[in-house]
Image 1 (cartoon, helix red, strand yellow):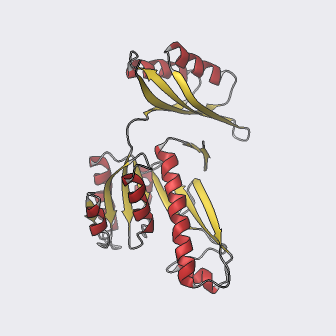
Image 2 (image 1 turned 90 degrees about the vertical axis):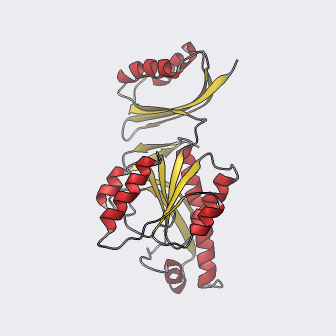
Image 3 (image 1 turned 120 degrees about the vertical axis):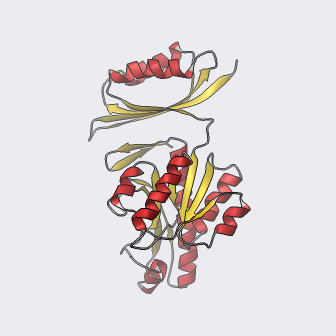
Length: 284
């Protein structure tokens, strides 16, 4: 018998019987649970669950959603059922640093990342050729202080037209406006370097080198109106030392940024991330 692959994610006030009721409903429909992960947050009293399951082809998807909707209403659940066979559609935004873009292009193109890059947007023309080599539409949308809101409207129109599931800021060196952040809430991921102290502005790795930093890090987070303070998805670090040049700092930083961003994108498209206020629950 053929089956269909689905992923259920939910969050709700914690109480007894949630897993029992959910697994019971899936059993009644003839589903086979392939993987299940859960977390109860004692501080917030919230419960989070991700279930990967097979749905028999004899059961209509709408019947599954209707039955689960009735169950969810009694528990105050915020829930989603995702068809795991469908590749989420990505819009990647980039400026003049292309390491994260190149990494994502390779991972998607080689089948390592279950997603489709629908479009690339940039405020510079540097990576038009790279996009063309992968057969991906490239949109050059320059931006100035005077044209920022109009440019963002073009981006949001592209998101709507291309049915984009996730916007990835792959070293896109522009601050998004509050309206844009709200429009993309929960579906835009940013990557940035994370040092102590925090080096702002141009050439952060050169600043880090000048201060004798010993650890280089990167943080991937959801975009919010609070600059670089959105819910954190993933972080990582690499050690550096006094014998390395500023250029070597930059190389190490680029590697860490690419790895951290690719993990965050992977976990998002695999529906492993649930928002928990200003934090995230990431099911591995």
